[in-house]
Length: 114
Length: 114
Image (cartoon, rainbow over all chains, first blue to last red; front, side, top):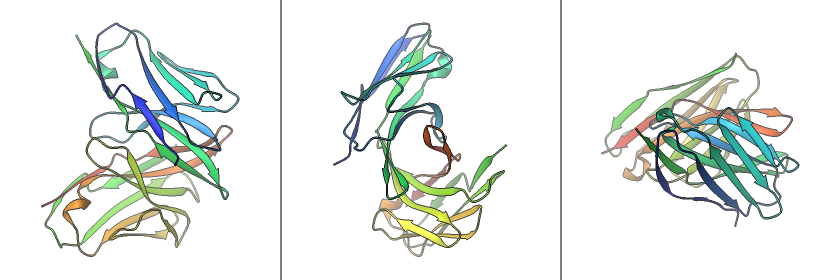
């Protein structure tokens, strides 16, 4: 069964601190992995997308890493801000008959406090 | 630029009543369109996807249905709502990038069935 597991489930950090979110997956064959940020009550917004051959991708203070051998990804947030408070969702895609099937993780809920 | 709209933003409906949620995309042609449901504390679940007008694929058996009467219009319907239909419904469209299938989400509809 294709799965995407994220940890921790929730996290509270002080403003200005760094944090790292984890994503382990069993989806195969792997096509790409994306990290989304979802503010409460809003739709997810894409942060990064990585293919099999990429092992790191940055978007401002967000840096995603990918180890396709161990099927692990992480999202590192540097110098956190209050606006980083949101759920972060790991999404893994695989090709299936010309259509990409996606599997969503349940997300990590991050709260940044002053 | 491309935009995606969903309405209504929130909806409270009694059990057994009908449902119609609408999603429209602007600024792109022949997009793949998706309906997801996000239950409280759970990951996104793909309900339907469409690769063209009148072409609907269902991912899970349920009492919901989808239709695509126009290229950039995707409608989620039900004849009789169940309590279990409560959730956050997200519409998305996708584009093929060099790295794979990138999905862009609408703002969502919060449905409460009482």
